[in-house]
Amino acid sequence: MKQKRYSNEQIIRPFRQMVLRLPFCVALISGTLTFNQSESEAEELTDPATPAYERVKDWPILPEEYVLGNPTGLDIDSEGNLWVFHRGSRRFTFPMPQKRIPTNTVTKIDSESGRILNAWGKDLFIMPHGLAIDGSDNVWVTDVGLHQVFKFDSDGTLLMTLGEAGVSGQDATHFKLPTDVAVASDGTFYIADGYGNSRVATFSAAGLFLGDWGSRGRGRNELRTPHGIDLDKDGNVYLADRENNRVKKFDSKGTLISMWENKEADQLYSISVALDQEHLFAIDYDKDEDGQILGSDILRLDLNLKLQIRFGRSGAYEGEISRYHDIAVDTAGNIYVGDILGNSVQKFSPTR
Image (cartoon, one colour):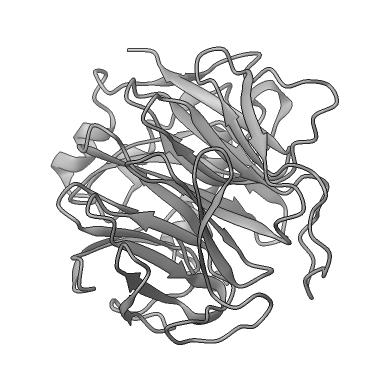
């Protein structure tokens, strides 16, 4: 909740809203109004050589009969295809529904043409959430309705299940509304047990519990809904600490290395380490004090969590206001985001 006082946020909000309502632009003013940046960092934000992005029109191309629900999880496979975990006709309600979604919820999309290459997942899930693709192109997903995490091969054959269906908890075999998963090159995987437990649980490639870390709170070493998780090639763990509005970088044992706090929105939803291993992309979500949705920004940081660029497509660009839930970046630098307001997947390509 925003503080009822004359703050930096209140000063910059009118400027940010004005930027969000420009037709798709890099928010150059964030270079001078980001208070946790040094002068040199602010200069980098306004560098004309900084890449800008534009939305790819008429992408993806989905059949008319295909029902794309809330696209909550995205990732890229080894061939550059985009995988989407979505909710079909299911809406997020609490308490959770009991019946499983009767339509396909996992979709593989050709990143160039935007056409569906494969789809599966009907009658498997109650409330889809996070998705990750490992080095062998296995598909990992989290279901916050079932309190479970699943590993499938790319054709939808179930390979591993973690958690007890419909039973929440906080131990080696139970989760409470797990939000996301990330898999290291050696097969070790990390589960963001986010909504209920605000912890990270670590497992071996065989699914053996190795330990967990994190607790709910506002402190530097605490979490309030770890909502997105990813890894770099050195095994460092990056978290989107959603309600604390932070990106955090930990080593593989859970020791905090660095932290970046977002000053320009309400919540920070997800992150993705780019495949070039040089950048981290993030998405946020903002609304005003009256509850009006202002939309989402896409942010690029380096792996030391130094903000480089911020751009918004969340105002009047083609008439849309979006609420991005997850983000993925391919080897060409194209950005993919899942919008749970418009139930769409959007692609942005660098323009320079």
